[in-house]
Image (cartoon, rainbow, N blue to C red):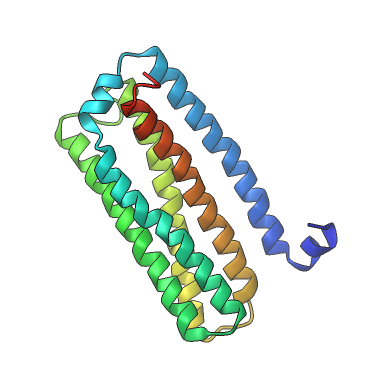
Length: 193
């Protein structure tokens, strides 16, 4: 993208800079998780307390939400207001289902007597996945505001805001692909730990 394109759309530049900084932060959290997980004997604990199948099901809802937000953006460009609202609402609903899955998993771990500071596994797991869940929650708030503006027919900032929120939401989904692969798939395959 040329610099003149950013001059016309400062929100786009802002979200791209934000996503870049958050990518670095998530990369550090992921490297920390792998580093400490590999140094400790917590692989058995992870296998005992995490359910990759159930989390995989809830992850499909998040991955589907990326398609839904893409559809909202595309129908927004075509000025199909009803469809855009439908896809924005679908994105929000799918994101909420994913967060509900995270809450269920956290509740199960907490019920087993483990907490954030119980050991190295729980500290790194809750930090990494909790930071991601916070990003999902922020995204849901932004999507809800966008839908609210759309329902109020506030059309003046819709296009730039839709694109910025979509980029952020795709980022959140992409980060979860990496987290799920490392925390669930690689751990249960015995590749790490």
